[in-house]
Image (cartoon, rainbow, N blue to C red; front, side, top):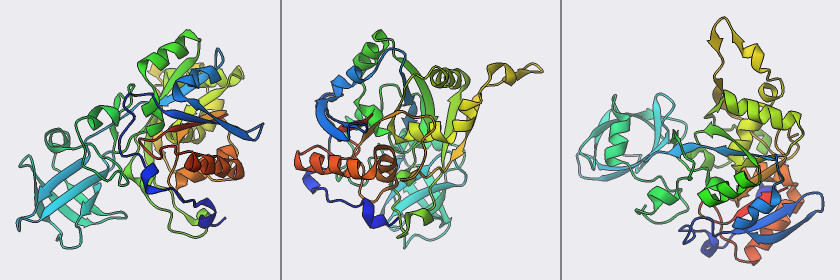
Length: 349
């Protein structure tokens, strides 16, 4: 399967540079797999596609201020973008990088200093000492993705974060969740839709390009995930009762599918023995989903429009069917949908 099969052209003016004026006021493209069709609604209509006892799975990761600015002793400006705070040593993208020497110190806007170490897979390793959280609080900026060609602003602190964000650690937002408002969640609750949470700390690796012609040779980046015990139980019950499971975002879907065996075989009593209480599943997932993958947990997917030739559009192609998905993308381009992180949404049912 060649990388060129997942390419398409998106006009630059359709790449959303700002979120909608009000959260949730976005367009929604509905893709129905069984009918092999798609049509347009508003995102606030998402509630209509749920039935009582359906389950919505949300990623409650919280974006950290992972973008830093500083200067070298020479006075040269440096931008530091943390790829993943959960791993040690910490890996970051530096711009510019080529001239920065190993063990060189960078002074941040907050006057804190960090040390630049050797080269890594994506960029450089950096050393923060023991106060990384304090440094990010003092000097960090919202880590907007590279296709948003502007500096971060005050509004991004709120709008690049979901309303249910809780577990700090992401360096990129789980963007499908950005459309949900407290009112939408309330309406789902009133409809007796169940909600479960997973955590996957989305990293900058989600934007990493596929560099192999044959996509099967691509090595997927790994990201930390966690599912609390009560949420494992909720997901397991939904599956056993044959209620539909909606994954909000490719991140939630990857957590679900990475833990398919754990979820299917979950027996609460088996995890309580010897006075030890089971708290949930956690680890790192590098699951790469592309056409041909057999989904075991997920019945519907809420997602945004994804970058050409990305692992995310490959996942969406696997879920919707490649031909149908690209027909839907063609419609979205021709009808001026907004694309990527701050763009419009799609639900695949």
